[in-house]
Image 1 (tube, rainbow, N blue to C red):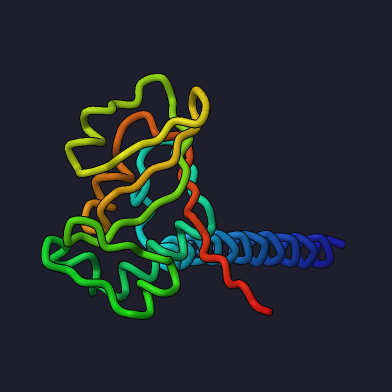
Image 2 (cartoon, rainbow, N blue to C red):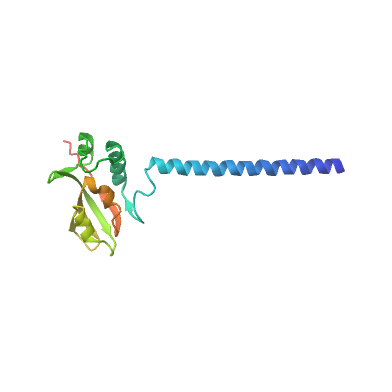
Length: 159
């Protein structure tokens, strides 16, 4: 009976060790998945605070990051014809601009927005249409008081 009891204890210890190893592997997989998902979507700190962005804006961000080689030399950056067409970018005062709608919090700073070349048109209290120079997009997403950004979408009319 003693031999059987020690054999059972060894088996239980072996199972516990196997369970712990499986938990560690599972935890490593979760950490790896999280790291990969952050790298796929860009940098986890790309949008400030609790700002929410539309899928269209996320797609623009990703495409712009690739087209500009990681947002390098944005002051002299000229978007590709593909980006101009895909996102209906407009050239205003020799600068390409993006436009859409934003939802604002009460602490939004109009002056900071104007300082980066942005323009707003108010439709209701917190919802406004915006236009901002493409080369200022990184500053734009970090402005205080923006709750949500929605991109304009290009409309294709077919007969």
